[in-house]
Image (tube, rainbow, N blue to C red; front, side):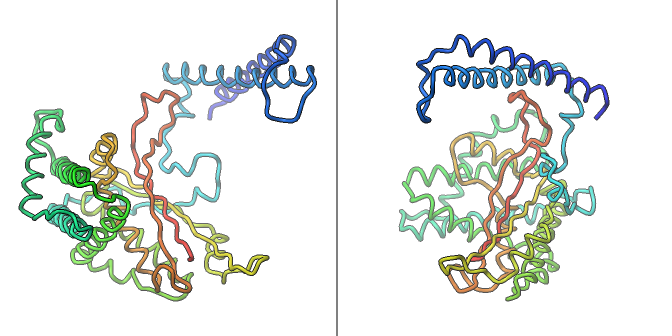
Length: 372
């Protein structure tokens, strides 16, 4: 950051602090003694002082936000708004800054065979889970007809430009049509959604991983279950990197970054669970993250969720969770069992105080390996 910006920020903070002091003194004399606080009874003077402090803090906060908005609207504060390649860099957390990045910036040619196979796996998983819930029969032919009807209905509004879409854009549209149809069927048939989504994502993840292994056999050696937690963790991290590489080489992502767990977190996770004071074993979960840039299905994911649908194509999340789960033996609930949780978040890596300028640039997968 340049010296001028530092000096300007310090000057601004000094001015705001002076305003806060003035506001505190002013409001302390004029605040009503009837302010309602939930704490212990206060004297009139203490109540007035406390009210003044709160109002002064609010004034400072409002002034600071107004200045940031003014600065951003006029292109000032470039150093503060500079995009961060990894959102974990924010906040000065030195441990979280250590990341593993995609070895190349080159994006592979879009793999239409894998894309078509992925949608077929999703169709089959949807029909299987629908049948498992004893819903009215939905045949593959009927499902495809409804998907085609959805395509005809939304194609013109989905593609804003009259130019022919790229293969990635066409795949994004296909995903949107498939998953919008899935969600409409779930609503129409009043399916119990939470268990359906759990079963669907698990079944689709297994199908996608099987398809990825067939196209890239090098994925298989990374998924070796081990009773040794440290070795299993190393395998899970290797699987995460391999899945991210696979998505990039298939044209489904442009680049990726994975956070590196600290040595302390790894030791805590791999060490035997320590008993607590009441004799119950206390285990340690290990979190890390994978940031995906240029996700080919990002637009369909966002649009489906904006419409209120909660089933959307998160292929990277399902592949990572399924692959990492295979690195540990045992099942959920078993002694020494390990489970993998994976959630996705949509991030704008460039800070701006204007919410209208928010733009999703990254899908951040938060992965937690849990010892049950």
